[in-house]
Length: 445
Figure 1 (cartoon, one colour):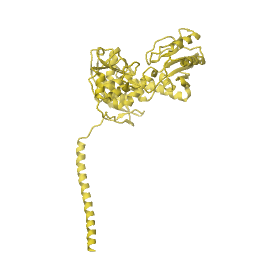
Figure 2 (cartoon, one colour; figure 1 turned 30 degrees about the horizontal axis):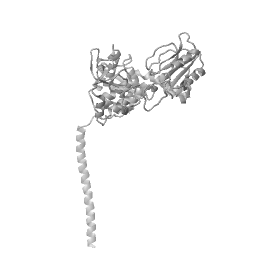
Figure 3 (cartoon, one colour; figure 1 turned 180 degrees about the horizontal axis):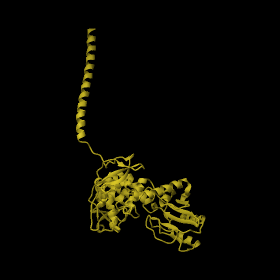
Figure 4 (cartoon, one colour; figure 1 turned 90 degrees about the horizontal axis):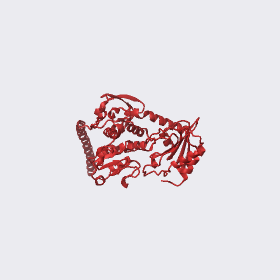
């Protein structure tokens, strides 16, 4: 009995000792935690502020743009660009009270940084060995989805932006071997895919965390489709950066040609975070057109557009009683061959176009091969001879967006939709039948 009692007493004493030890440990930990917390508070890490996303409910924010978004000064005889510092130092900007974009981390993987200098194909620097992106100069390394490009197969993508992002993630030795002695990177035109491509090459630390946004913006411009409002906004900011409505229009005053393209690219690269993360600051450059397209798409889905598909030919006819934006038609068509038939009191207006996907070199999409539209225009003119300066006109299939239409013969810039149409005497059944027959013929390209 005494031995049993001794064992029980020892066990109870041991448990009490362990409980006391745990309490003492907790008190020591709390004291140590307090000291650590105080030290950490003195070394508080900074984090970029959340970026506002406009949702309709706005507030006025006084923001010094020149201080918040440092820009690159450009020393050139023709102009001195300094980004946003020409705006008022307390510019009033509309931002959202409710929603913010998540913090965008920088890439975790190391990226090779070469001393490539920005230029444009129309400037003297282009005469030396250079890397051309989104477009194609006659020689040198090339990263592009244009026809005949010299892009290595391992980096190919539907957009030049995707190609350049693939390059930016490539092994350092592979990048160096591809670039050789090239010290200049350039583009031979000016558009959103060009800007996004240059950003991926020159500032991959900015481009890589925003890959999806860059691809959406580039696709909006190159393929003429409405994906998201933000992708559309960025594309239109790039397109209209030097327009009178732009808050930075003065930066490009009296510039033209290659110098203007270069200056706009340089400003965009210096202010890429502002344009990509806070496009609502430039709402004047896109809001009205975006509202128009959204309204037309909504009306079309509710019955304002009569859609006819020839799915085996990739051919769609969209009939309306009013005008329609090219992006509205492309977004609703579900086809790479698109005809707009506008019914008017004076007769039908016809305009057909091949979408750009059948001109670019695509990886994930395979649109139908193009047909030369000029023989079709000739056949249509035989049954409806030219009248009052109007005739059936067609572009060569080598144009990025070839058209066939009835109206005065005129040229048209890429991406524009300015040719005048005239009412045709031909009924829809005749025109549609001739198009179907033409597309059923053997490819000519």
